[in-house]
Length: 116
Length: 112
Image (cartoon, rainbow over all chains, first blue to last red; front, side, top):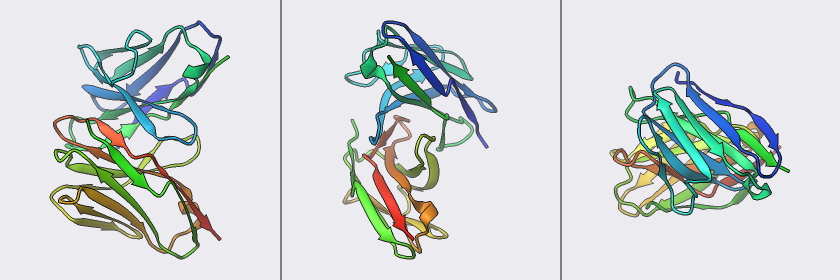
């Protein structure tokens, strides 16, 4: 089945620094990947849609200059949290769709970001 | 955009009883409705899904029903077991938009 690898699984960073999270589709090509944020005991909130070779589409209220998304290849999308603050601490998770399937998305394992 | 509401937010049932979780959606263009199970700190796992061209789908102890007219769909778990305890999320998506919009989640506890 489709496998999505996300790295790192956990990261602790200082306020003001930037953190990059990678999302890779291991055995399929993904023209579209999605980035979600999940606060404790809350639902997954769609942040942005990452499109290979073009600009990401951000959901309303998500700062595109703070959450930089790059989807440079059919198997890799990255999310960079710039100038991180404690309120950015959250569980970030990506998902990707295998274009060979009409439906069906696979989630990455998630990244627990803690900003201190 | 799509708005998905989910109820209840928490649900406790005795082992062996049934559990029902309900979701409503707003966008009539949505045509794919998956359900995910998420254990603490882990990725969501797809447990069952339904497309708009059917009204019901069953997979062993799990079933999903869809009422497109009313824009609601439900997850039914029968003969619940302690390992069913987790947070369950419904979602809605359309083929055109590709994005998933998730419900707010239901924390299910199955009491042995």
